[in-house]
Image 1 (cartoon, helix red, strand yellow):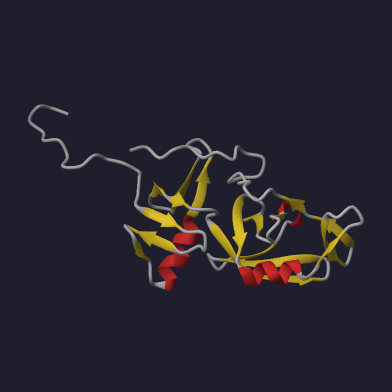
Image 2: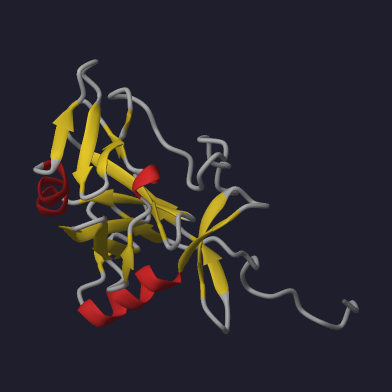
Length: 178
């Protein structure tokens, strides 16, 4: 920049004041995003940036970092049908759930990786109930999902355990820059 050019009146940053709460609701600068279609669009843009180890909103035009309280997506509906489970998420996407990614806390809170097993989601109460009503305990006391093909073991979590944003990745997120 030459000495004749003025510095911009603000610092350029990819930080945002957008937050996704534990129930999948989107907030901007402390105010709830009230428009349902905008909230679904923002949910459809959520992703995890592996290099920065942070959640982002990314669309075809731009991207920014976002704060996520627990999981960036919420499973709103779950249907156990025959040989599998279908879910609908807070971004209105529907998919066959990879049952091998399901994790259950002692209190019955359910998490799984959606978008083909790539991004963490928390089940809301009704979706968790729809899934858990098909769970049985194995002889050794472990939970397993009853499907047509038989019992599929589910992973259990400690009450204080946090899952990684992506399967097999580090559970700790990078701190936002200030």
